[in-house]
Image 1 (cartoon, helix red, strand yellow):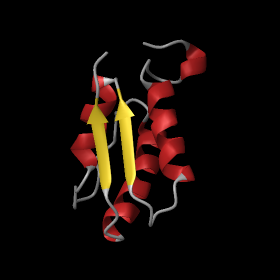
Image 2 (cartoon, one colour):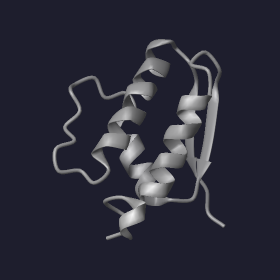
Image 3 (cartoon, one colour):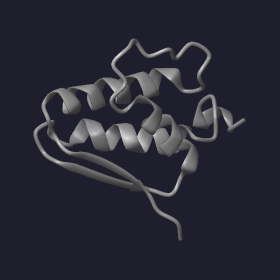
Image 4 (tube, helix red, strand yellow):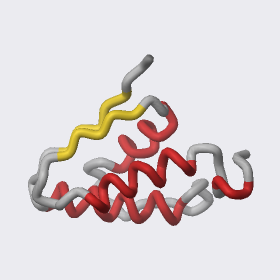
Length: 89
């Protein structure tokens, strides 16, 4: 588990950074988000294009993940390009 100031898990800082990038980028603008956190990639890829109701019960960082999913779905509905890529150093 992450430190208390990081939220429920150690992935919280990366998830917040992703959310802030989504929030601050206009919906109609294409988005390329590069990250080196495999857990973030798995969490995001699970929800991109998901049409059913997201089941976040018990998920760490569910509140911030739900907010990011909401923005992702708006971008998808607008037909805006989204590319989230995993990079290694």
